Length: 80
Image (cartoon, rainbow, N blue to C red):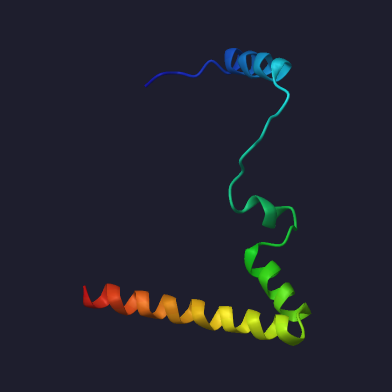
């Protein structure tokens, strides 16, 4: 098993950062929850609670269609 030279890797990262203008970092899915940032389910529920009128009607229709598609997909997988 190859050992990692941490000092060399940090120096290489520092070198890359010195010349980069646009940098992006990808963190795991739980990162936002650990920082008390709402996850997708919480955002969706917040939007659902805030909608009114035609927006709420259309949102509920989309949710119903999504659940139907999920259900049909599960049935198809069971019969395959």
